[in-house]
Image 1: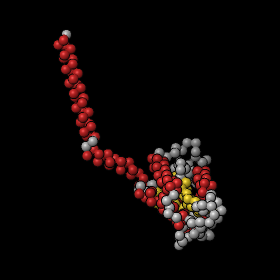
Image 2: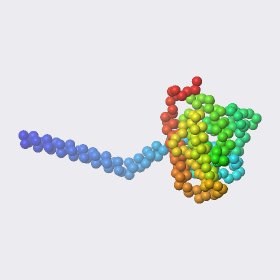
Image 3: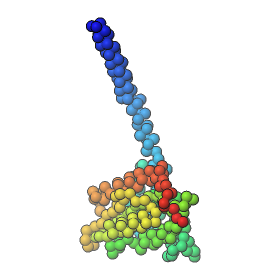
Image 4: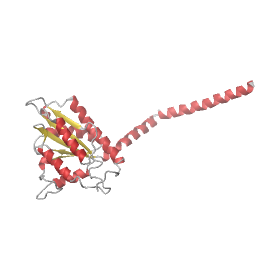
Length: 256
C-alpha cells in the first residue's frame, strides 16, 4: 500500500513538473522581445481601419478663405488629431461657394451646392463648424443644414437614407454665449436626417461677456475646450470605424 501511495505521489509530482514547465515556456514566450514586437504590430494593425475614414469639415464662417477664421483655427485642432490617427481630412469654406437657397438638391442657376454634396456623400464623418452671431449658429450654417435636409429622402440601394452610417459632430467658436444652443441645433438636425451622433462631439470656445478677444487671439489653452476637441476627434473616428465594420441593419428603418 505504501509503495502504491508513493507511486501516485511520484506521478503527481511528475505531472506538476510538466505543467510548470509548460507555463514557464508560455510566460517566457509571451514576455520575449519578439512576442512584444508582435503584440505591438497587432496594436498597429488594429488601428489601421482609421486610415480609411474620410472626414469632411463644413466651415460655415461668414468669411471667405481669403480671411482668417476663428472657426478654422478650432477645426484645425480637431483635424490635427484625426490626421495623426490616419484619417483623411478635408475642410470646405462654404462662403467660397455660390450656395443657393432652396430645398432641392440642385437649385440651378450656378448653384454650387452639388459640388459640396458630392463630398458629403463620400464622407464617413461630417463636422459642421460655425461661429456664433447673436447667440446663434451662422446663416451659412443654417443654409448648409437646409440643403442637407433637402436630400434626406435620397436612399442607398438597401433603402436606408444616404446619411445612415455617417457620423456627425460640431465645432463652434464665438464671444459670450450660444455654443450649446448652436450645438443642439446642429447635432439634432444631423441626427434627424440619419447621421449617428456619438457622445461629447461638440467642441466649442466662447469668450467672456461683452466685447473681447476672439479664439485665435487667445492662448488657446482652455482646458475644457481642449478636452472636447480630443473627445470630438476620437469619438467620431471610433464610431465611424465601428459603423464601417458593423453598419446599421436595414430593418425597420428603410424609406418606403
